[in-house]
Image 1: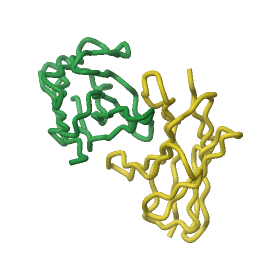
Image 2: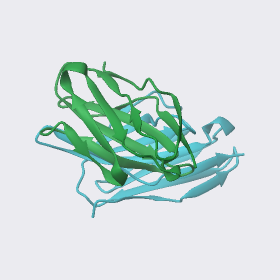
Image 3: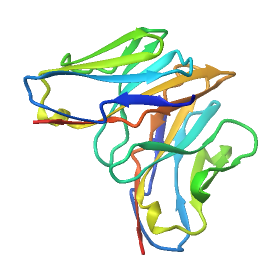
Image 4: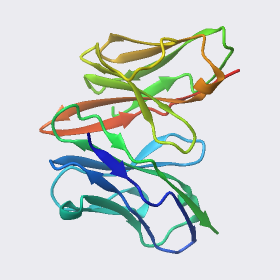
Length: 114
Length: 114
């Protein structure tokens, strides 16, 4: 069974700092990759996704992620965070083929101080 | 229409009550899902319906009873719940196209069991 690791469980930054959240998965085949964000008390929102093509994916709110196949990674980045980026961030992976049911990472809690 | 809707948004119920959560999508997706999410945790898969048939039940207690009346609707019937069942309940739908599947999540129902 595939697994998804998010090594940064809690991240605290000041506004304007750069952000990188790690996501690694264990699955040898073709995968679909997602980052979701959940603001306090709100629902899950899709930040960005990767299916194929250019491994550098741009999403909403200035976020981007890079798929590095050789490292089984899909790290999320933002050059300059804002206080409003305070949220939970979840990486999810589903294998292409099979059930297509995503496996979620445990999440990273980001706090941005103004 | 790329939206999954869920009603109600909030629900408070006693341990002896019977209530239902509703989910609807009009994207023509043939797979629909129920997830349970606790605060700051990733969504946990409960049930999967594929072509209106229950295909996955992740060992969910029988006090949760799913129903898929048609391809657009998904219900979750609740009876004799426990306080630890308080959580955000998320519905999602997906369709596989050319080896790619993306889940579309609804806004969730925030359930409190007293």
